[in-house]
Image 1: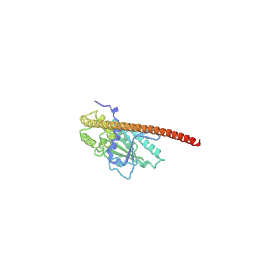
Image 2 (image 1 turned 90 degrees about the vertical axis):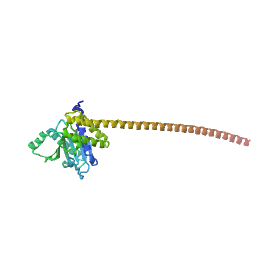
Image 3 (image 1 turned 180 degrees about the vertical axis):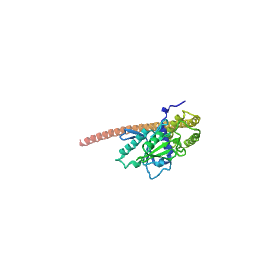
Image 4 (image 1 turned 120 degrees about the horizontal axis):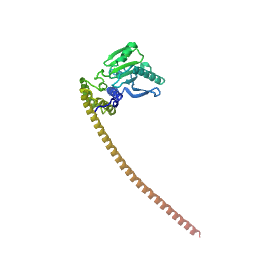
Length: 304
């Protein structure tokens, strides 16, 4: 069954992919997806905070991280346009403005990353020819836009090294025969690590399953079968986990009911003990009254 592009959240897939591909450095990075800027009036796809820039992350793309890294992520069917480029530059200015009184953020502390599957020919031509900027290919699929103030990088996921960004590379809706090896590698990696962060891996595999189910070409169809197996396995695990949690819940409820019955029984015993104590106190009071009456009568007899 073919899946509409509308059913695929490319942003979710890309953010999850970045989290997974950078999992070895999770103690250094904080991810803010769909982050709001400047009085919550604007929203950017992703902000990654690098908590200690004195520690470099030895991976292409991540080795360019500054303290604050803003990401504009384009869907598979679109590319980074001139308009989206200038919009993201504006977001960087808003972020610096919004945080100026609370930190020392300046242009040198902020990097921009514009991510798309395809090479943005029109944008790069505009930057080179119309703006006079140097656009340098510093690594496979990574382009550095220089002399612009902010650090700006254009990431073409179709061209990035799969050995470094396996999950991000596999965010696609059409694959070639040579790409199947990476899907197989992803399958093995997923089975090993998906329990580490089940929500992140689950978000990723759901979107990839939806994308591959479009099945354009034999390679994508083969990949779709592999990813469907992963997805089905993931669903089965979720069902088992839900059943386990339900059993724990039922057991806890049973234990609580037993404890409540025990407490109620103890309370009933305590109530009976209190009632008996009240009865004894009343009897003591009655006996004291009788003794006082006897003493009074004896006292009157002695006077006579």
